[in-house]
Each structure stands twice: as C-alpha cells, then as structure tokens.
Image 1 (tube, rainbow, N blue to C red):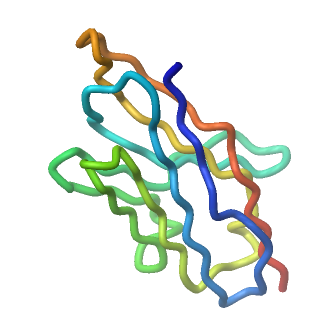
Image 2 (image 1 turned 90 degrees about the horizontal axis):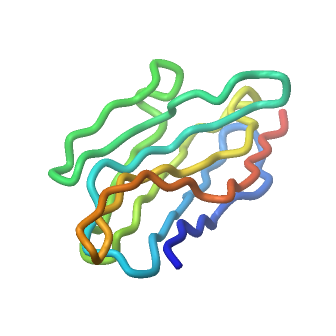
Length: 120
C-alpha cells in the first residue's frame, strides 16, 4: 500500500523552528513534484511550498525567507524547515506528492496531516 507519512509537527513559541518530514512508502518507482499545504481552522487549504524532482522550488509569499523545502530523491522524502515561526503559521500541514508507482502508473497522494501550533 502506498502512503505518505508525515512527522515533525508540534508546539513552539513564536520565533522558534520546526522541521517537518514526509516519506513515501510502498510500491513506488520514483517521485515527481512534492508539496506542502496547510489548513488553519476556518480557512481553505493553501499551498506553502513545492519542489520538483530537479530541485526547483516555489513558496507562498507569507513564508518566503522563513521556510525552506528540500527533498531526498533516494528516500522519496520531502522536508520543510520552518524558521522564525509566527502564530499565523498555526495550522495542520499536509504533504502532497506526485508518485510514479511500480507499475509505472502516476498518482497524487496526500499525507495524513501534522499539527503545527505557534504560541505568542
């Protein structure tokens, strides 16, 4: 069974840092674009950062200069380093990945989400 497993969420004070990880497991051949989204209570899910297999990245304006997305292609894992955290970064963070399966089919998967809480 193919799945994305996230880890690294938690509670931190404003100005602190957290590092999220998301690992794809199962019958996977490779991974293409990988992304981090977040959803705060009462708000729509929004794209935070994305990275291509080749390492090109994009960021939401609200996190530019504070968050860094990276990946390990050999491990089919994506990371989100979050620095200078603000209370408005509080949300459930989800990873999303375009995976190439062992049968060479392509499909997008979502992680289960991990809570990030930033207190002032």
